[in-house]
Image (cartoon, rainbow, N blue to C red; front, side):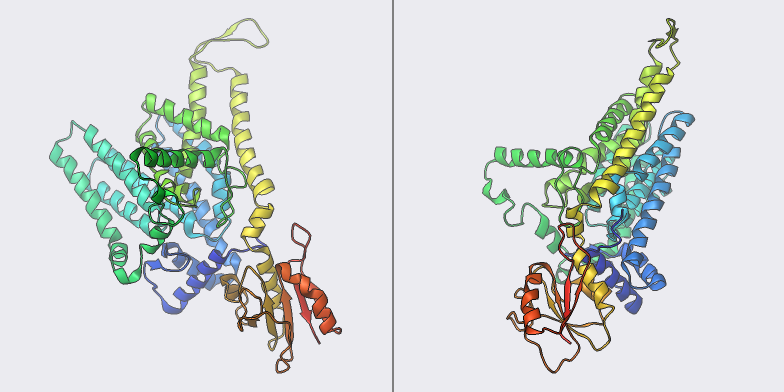
Length: 510
């Protein structure tokens, strides 16, 4: 099951911006549409739209490609920096890549045309650069890490939290490198910071130009400035601290235990991360830190602590604004399996079917079998949650405008001289999905909510001969009136929605 029959207005915006790039060339580093978003991934969308046409498939193909590349980059990074022996690195890389590839969280965003899917890839490249810098301890590698860190700001607004998390770890790393002269360590930091600033300079220049309104997005979603967030009513330090603490805990609760549906992207029908995978990742983090499994464990801890601050201080989008940690959770879950295996290896086991004990250093096949079942259970639950529960759900279909996409398909079948009277309480004729998928149709709003004349009307303009009434949502109840007014009408009904109503009803009076 996929989202192929539905589409979101934000996906259409991505496609429209891709078309604008094809027309104009560079459109800068930031687009004000959809509350504002970096344009980095949109240039890839432009290439896809240029090759495959202005379709939702062309927009989503970019997400699918980036999601696939992310898994490959993740595997390669783990093979080099997972920590432990070479055999452990190989196992962790395979398990981690499998956990990420089957993650409902990752699959969901890989199947929709949101630029968000590029964020984990940018975060992984940034982390990989930092790991190489820590390994080689050479200024040029710290410059590379800085460039990769700065590039992420062109993928998603919340990347600033990744930069803070990685920056905090780098300070931690530099402080612990006491055998290296302090002047050299300061040189590493200077190389990193200067590279970040130079790379991010185009975005910084755009952001600090007041006429661009860059900070309107953050002001709209920040709990400190957004209306009705509840923050303005808190006056005591204790109440503010308790409010923020509760929101911080809620981020993790929403992620793995008691999720809420996000009306923007549709995720949250079930928790994005299965509870068992979350617990396994926590075990991997604790064991990895205790056994000093390398810098990637340390980075994961810093990300786990700092990244939830983003959704804590903003409204809505809890799962989106922490999405960059998805690969790290997959890595930690893989380490958790290694932790259980190593624990079993240090014990003596009485045989299940025979009296002798299994020697220390050997793991009974039943334990290995349980670990295999644990892996299959987590990946299987992720796939089941994604393709059986989440994507086919009524909530996702509503979020991705099943009715509007069906209307657009119908509009594209009409003759060139057709004129459409459109009735919908949810969408106007200017909704981005209609503009992207059925732009050449002559259409006017006739609903009470969006009517061009300001008044609802079923009257027919005699000057327009090829008229089609298209009814969506409760306006389908007007069908008997239309049949009474125009008894010779031809009626077309769209496929049924999950509740049984047609996606649309079209009435052609002649």
